Length: 87
Image (cartoon, rainbow, N blue to C red; front, top):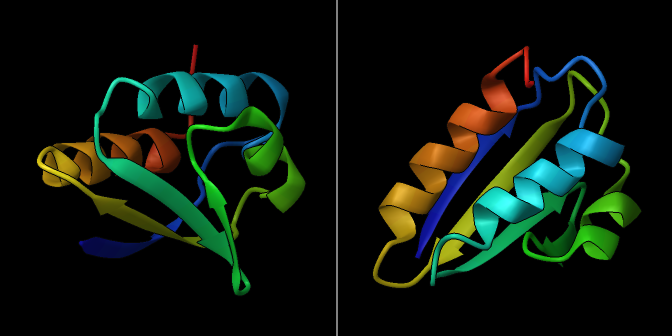
């Protein structure tokens, strides 16, 4: 199990399109991946779960991953969250 706290730098936060892209990215990994904000933990592979967190730009979230590709998952998703521009 890997845990990492990341600051969201996406201009719109993890809403709508970036959220959909994040979920798509998370689904590429076989590990169980969760995103936690203010004590609320959701499945990072679920668009509804992610939207329910209402993650805005500048928020600190915790990424949790467990599985054989957990390190790659956390590295890739951290990169996604910390990237200010997503096309």
